[in-house]
Length: 318
Ligand SMILES: Cc1cc2nc3c(=O)[nH]c(=O)nc-3n(C[C@H](O)[C@H](O)[C@H](O)COP(=O)(O)O)c2cc1C
Image (cartoon, rainbow, N blue to C red; front, side):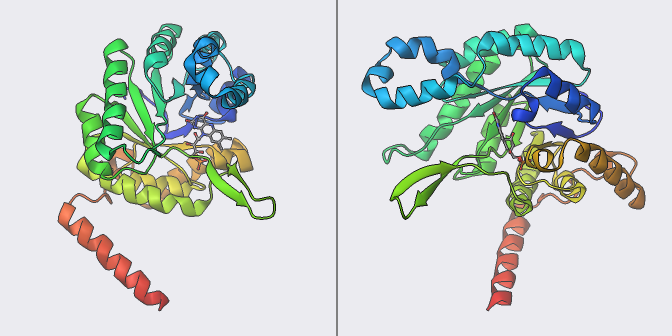
């Protein structure tokens, strides 16, 4: 993204990056950069929603959203946090917005740029539940959001996406062609849960587990081989080994949240020390010497390799 980080560990957007004190604590703990807790687009839209159609058509949903919004910060507080953070720390401050349309995004993008954010991470959330919506239409919406934001601001723009795309390598290339500065893989979604006693469906959200890393490794190795995008890998990285694996697969940085929630910010220093020791053991002086050396550069071979591995593992279970 054109940002210089002292190391590849980024404190991911979460409660750990929501306040000035937390941002300072992240820097003190050794983080190379911070992605601030997301501003939710609905906060920007709130005024309009009160008089808008969505409110009159879905009053219950609207009430629920409003009650949630009270816990989120507004755009003024967000820009204030950016300004203060920029004064207080030296590491890059990446603003983040979580949204579903770009009507509000533009207003926000301009304001965070003015407040001094080093970059903007777009956490785009486009739920795909309409049976008439085609995959291409969903992808086109992402691309349009990116192009519109890129045409409006000059700071680098990254996009945090989920893993459910029909052809992720091709989609990533489209993002690259439209000037995306970095791809953040993957967004962590809430998941549905069913209570079989109360016959109720509700939503769960839990910290990641270390098994989640395997999906991330696969897509990082593929997308890094098929595009020149910088990749920030996030989701299931719980150790220094995890960081090293992602760098070998081709990520430029990693973003951590769950590990820091469960073990504390002190983990960053532990991981950095262990990565240095690993690099010494393997005679690497810089990350560039090993970044991406295990990505899937040969398309046919990669597909064959994945297929062979699949067959081997399935056979082992029989
Ligand atoms: C409590 C919590 C709050 C989060 N809030 C946000 C958020 O506001 N915006 C966002 O883009 N990601 C958010 N995330 C996702 C993290 O930034 C991160 O990408 C994800 O948790 C995967 O990394 P991990 O496995 O290290 O947790 C949140 C994660 C957690 C655990």
